[in-house]
Image (cartoon, rainbow, N blue to C red):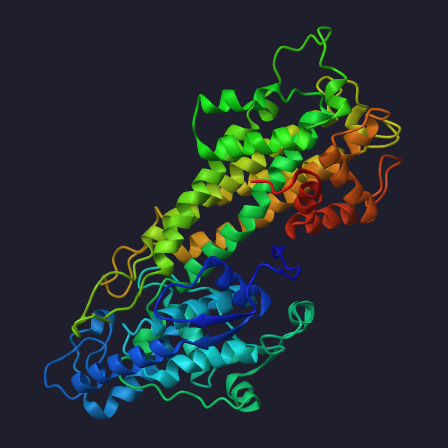
Length: 538
């Protein structure tokens, strides 16, 4: 799986202070993906301590209080004697750290831990200051708990993934250890991650294992932090990827001798979707001053309309942008939330609630998987037109150097087609599913974690599909010589050629070239090459 935007980003913070208020998207990405250091704000420390005193008072109360003096879930009516309450918290974490399957990516685990710390910092959970600080210490020490892919239903949030993190804070389970946060970004990202027991990792870093007290185990595992972290990372990646899809579309429209007249601003004002207008503006800017386009801007051109995959690119790409906009609104609300159960209210009450349910996040995760599938689908259709002599307007079959002897980009399109079919399967929503658990106490679950996991695969697939379109369109633009492309699209072709992706010629091993362009798309260099000509694209 491609991990997007791994090159150092000068627009991301290198240090993040976690306070009572919400983290920004940039702060989440900086800590999760680029190793920014973390600290807790002073007012957050004061609030955590004040709320902890409320929990300690309730711990000695004769009345039962959920998660403090009772069991959990279906065992909520079971009273726990005072001498067993510390064991109750440890047992909760150990039993809930029941994940299975492949390890979850480091960036996802770091995002999950940071977001749980953000909720702890609101002062609404009742943990001790030292427990919250332990999360910051692990992040800064480069210690990443091993979290398994399968185990979360998104019901009481991401119970199992969060429990694996809490287990590491207790000095149990396995972790990956790399450089400390704040190290050189390229070295931090490329470094191997040593697998060792958590207790050993904490000892090396000088971090004392946390002995959980009343309520703390519950506070560490009730949250939507995993699915939210993956949503924020996906939105960050899609921001670059959807603009790069516009770059690919402009290259294709140009290479297929299409018209940019349909991207005129007044046409798109007739249907005032903001994303559509931004995409159309991008396409106009990208195709500006194209000699290829000017070559057929005459009365002799007999084509009345381009195919939908060319003409309707702004409508599809724009709708994707607008869907991302709604998903960002949901993410912003969730970043501002204090998700726990029970929660300590501002007036000091300790109340059970259902805020941990992942439905709001799960729904938009599914929406984005649909978006990824649709943008990939239209990209593949544009690519396919290059390869068919009946539709490519004068290009050789499959863009081959010696058709018959050479196959050109025939199988590159097969790769796209396979990915698009996979993306259609990933677009099937997870959030409409539910499976009862915990003796029917948790009888409707969100499946938000599953929606997030498949979205990550969908973003990866879309990256690869767009990369194949860029690769193919670049070859087609070269084949239009001596006519020259627009300066912006020419800059993308030059980027590919300068990165070792050769121009037209006899067949060669194509997979390495595809992977090179995948990297250029993923880390934003294709977009940046075009923007050096156009200025900032939308």
